[in-house]
Length: 593
Image (cartoon, rainbow, N blue to C red; front, side, top):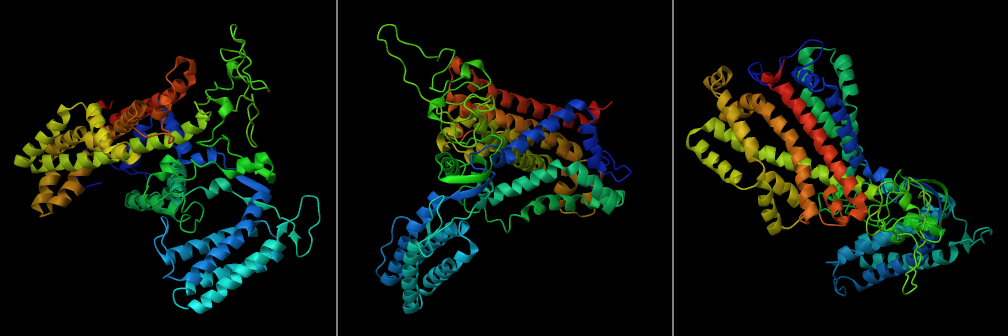
């Protein structure tokens, strides 16, 4: 806080190791309703952050054998080694760039990686005693790709040996049939592998957010322990440590991300919001559930997420299926609905009966008519609505937070300049603010989105850059009020730079109304994004958001499509409004009793 904190809205430091912001937090959470709202919001965000571990068709843990993947890798290994040999043999002059490969060096790296990937699949299911020829082949492939640009003769020899060794491995490492003993030199027994497919799809960004949210959820515990044990409850030490705590909260979750190899290349570099949209591995069907269902993967142990359905996993026989706890959702083994409007019936005129569509219960899923199979129903493609709501929360909540960050940043800068500088600067910026406020915000957002196109980043920017005038007016008013205070005059008299006076002394004391406005703006952003997605100007399917899920069907017959996403939007907005009112009461001295 600034030297003039006593003049502003924030309360003075107290004893017992608590600083002024601790006192503000105590005032914010003194109501039971506010504590419940904060806990519910924390739960909503936790579900969104930990979505890959809560909903998906990728197992959390699987131990078993995958003969199909092993055979495929073994069959394609000689082809990959042969292509690598051909690239080295032709050289740079004989290489014709393809659509996906721009240079000969890139083609070499790509083909080397193809060999190594197939070797990794084989290693996972072979005993360590069988790894020696695989390791030799990996060394030859890496050395051939590395030496090809400089030492072509040595690279050719390594590539030729690698091709020959790959052919021998194909003949000697065939998997033995189940129940039969392997033949030495011709077949081998597959060893069970242990994998964590859900973790393998997590990117470094997702891992950082998971660690960050874990620290935030545990904030009351570790903050109290740090203040009491490390800082010994000293008031000034607690105040000085605030920035170090914030830095630690941001940096500590990044430590596990450095050695993290799972999912590091899953999200494309050009899509910084892939972690929120699920546009990397979440939209692709996992091969594990299909392999487990068909029997290609024989699992000794299997742990599926609580919602064992993928974000884009389709069940054709269960399109627009009501929530499975509802009586009308019961389906017979033949594939007919047992009751309700979609039950089996015969046309009285033509005698036509709708053919049955049996439900396929895949491995790891609840039973056909279990209440937990689709507790919120399915959409028009048979995708589980609960799984899509879990992932859709990432988009809606991200849009609300990031758009609020944009509008607060723009509003604070514009309002601070207008309120502190005054004169023609204030006059000019005030007219700009009034021009923006002349247009209805929602229609202005619709116009801008129609020109620049939908997309999560575009929605965030548009929401932030069209709703900043309210924050700018608040900051301008606070600066006009505080500009003549004694601590500001003293700062200017001491020769402090204008930037230091604005951001070090005035702005911290003007942040009370901004925090209140930001809290309400998050709820407004979520509501606006939902409305845009409902009208078709928001996030495009198959990427879900709470608003886009409402567009799956507008028929009253499919009531669950409108009820559950709409209820989630309503609850989240109400929770943010309750929290905003508590922040307003804590920071506005006129509302204190």
